[in-house]
Length: 305
Image (cartoon, rainbow, N blue to C red; front, side):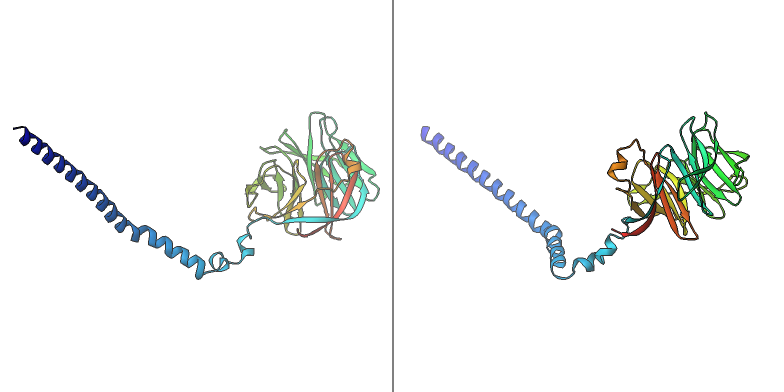
């Protein structure tokens, strides 16, 4: 009887061993079948793609000319200094325009805001009118026989007779007032955002607007403006950049890097940021200055860095 029991235990042990071997064999077979099925779907396309990249097409063929690959990046220009003129270091420049041999400048700060006509060569103030202490003066432009000036947060602008500086009209706008210029047809106004507004000169009603952008997105803090040969030049507040803007699309054509314009000696004075662009269309001259700067510069814009 004992022998029979031992024999049955050996048979059961053998059967258990056979069963475990069979399960292992089935697992290995299933893995092999799965890999055999997946390999053509996953591995072969990867190998095919690597072969194409390595042996059939160059980077230029795949992506085009490398210059075109970077064509959307906004170019950066530099400048040369052509002439240097005196500028009143007490003038907190908010607007600047050149017309028929004279500079018209709008200054800011509460209690110190003015509209001025100055002599380019000497910086001498030839005529001025003071704004009320409650107003912070901003951008200016000359249109015909008038000078138009914005204020910052008062939503109010003024029209002056260009010769007498007599105030002949006040007008309202819903945004802050920063920079002002015109293209011969419309006034163009900035409000410190990325938006430029086009206004009718007589009614000051909005006729259109554009959002200014470069390859990185919207360009904000647009400040003083000048219309130069079909482009809008704008100071970007609190930076050393002037941007050149396509007035139809809003795209920044180029940035002008004005870093280093004011020398280290002058930078040690209580000066503020770069602000103020004026253009002499008859002699093709560009003038720039800054808030509380002691100098005004005639510059020539150079090509991309």
